[in-house]
Image (cartoon, rainbow, N blue to C red; front, side, top):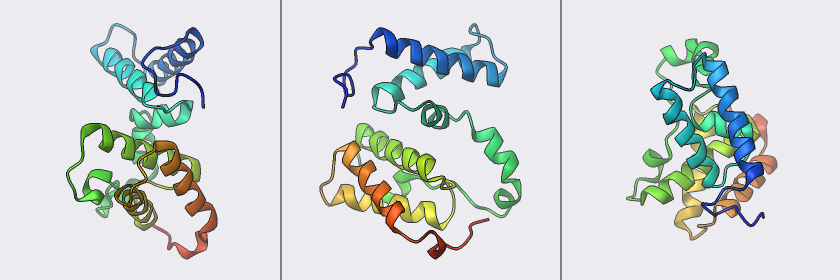
Length: 164
């Protein structure tokens, strides 16, 4: 683990990485830096980065960059009422904003790495697993993510019905 994983101070190479992601997102969305939305996007990228998410794809996913593409690709399933799984709804207990953000980041990262659509039975099962681990005392983000990855790698993918 790098010494800056939970630090609020950004090193020059981290700023460069964030800058590249920011530029990619703005370019992809067709926005310039002087839009109000650009500032909000930048704040969200930095917040997620400081929260421990370092992968470019995960950061883009967490700020909603891929949502328009997902809506287009899955338009037929969305019209049938399928919603994205929400950790907040799954936990069913009051959590601090920091705990909720950490659980959501863990869920988002696991979905990205395992290529799990964020709606459907498989996503809901994964979210419940992460929430149960947290309730059982696993409060370290890295440990929750490792546990979720282990679960997905050892479970039989064929066990899950197609959500489409």
